[in-house]
Amino acid sequence: MIDQYIEHKQSELNNRMLVELKQLNIPSSFMEAILYSMEAGGKRLRPILMMATYEAFHHEPEKIVHPALALEMIHTYSLIHDDLPAMDDDDFRRGRETIHKKFDEATAILVGDGLLTYAFQVVSTSSFLEAEEKVYTLKQFSQASGFEGMIAGQHLDLKAENKHLNEHELNEIHQLKTGALIRAAIKIGAYLGGATPPQIESLDDFGKYLGLVFQIQDDILDVSGDMAVIGKPVGSDEAKNKSTYPQILGLNEAIRMKESYMNEARNKYEESKIEQPILLELLDIFGNRQS
Image (cartoon, rainbow, N blue to C red; front, side, top):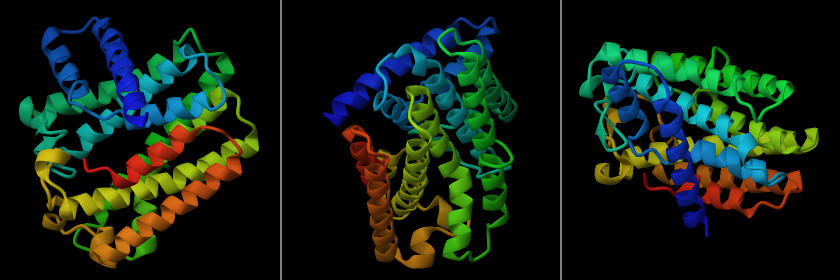
């Protein structure tokens, strides 16, 4: 069931994304780079997570579409910028050349900048959201993607190269760099669906553990994955002398920790008193994915 659910949502998101982007009045050469970035085969797990959370409370689909599209734009912007030579300096993403390798560095920066800012335009001009809903959504996005979220996480991640971090320091980096946007996805989905404040709080904790699970599995795949499956070089973190969970804990202990966080996430799901088993299935996918 979950595979069919994901495929359906991916198709819906991809179709909506093309409609949204192709209406822009911009040079065709720049549009080519934008579409290259958005058609790169991403799994769309973050917007699907948002939609699944929303559907635990409400089934009016149009209300969640624009926030979901905006979320994928913000996520793609973050990947484009993370891959830049001044950041993580990666040549492959999602199984093909990164934007700065396919086009050039300036184009990559501009595409990333444009996706981030257009995400806020998509939300603020949505005809399906009330004013208060727009304010809440924009606040969550700006906090998760800004100085108190992904930006701080990327800064700490870059500063941590060639240093040996402890578990607490590594958690701090990834709760900001990876976890903040995952938590925003869940909180926005819950809020727009009509969740109560205690439910939003429990689901926010669910998202916190989910973000850690995602990152630990990412680190595990960097050690034991297959480039043909994960879409980027294996061992890139080790080559850059970055601290990872398998490096500081050992592979077996990293797996044990991931499973412990998955159990914590399940407990928070139960605490929220909702009936949306797809969230638990997504948790399993985040924790056991191979790409």
